Length: 105
Image 1 (cartoon, rainbow, N blue to C red):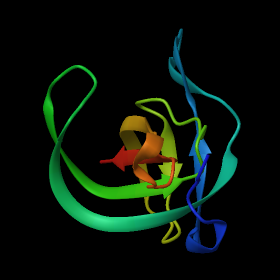
Image 2: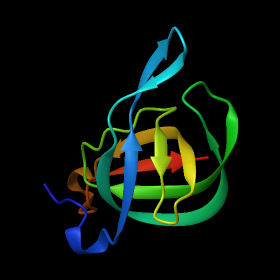
Image 3: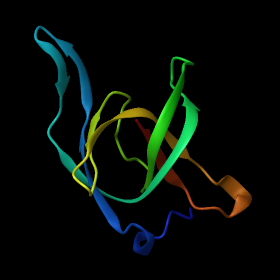
Image 4: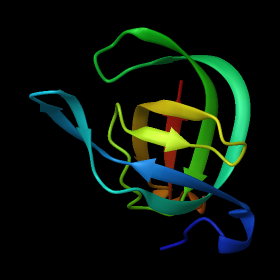
């Protein structure tokens, strides 16, 4: 299995996984540092519910990264944002590296 090369993961983000809604609002897990390649690029994406949403940043990380929709993310710049969608990308027999793609607001 070919994975994204570790030397390309030049950024670090903090991921606070969304756990659900509690009596006082959204609840999150403990922050976890994730090595990634962050790309600031504005584009129109679809949320898991099918809504069109503007994504301003996408990051790519090792397969298995946990960042459910609505998770809180702190980018290297210090900006805080929210996960729109998280996808595991499997290159299969194409020879492209397996990775996780996380689209952010």
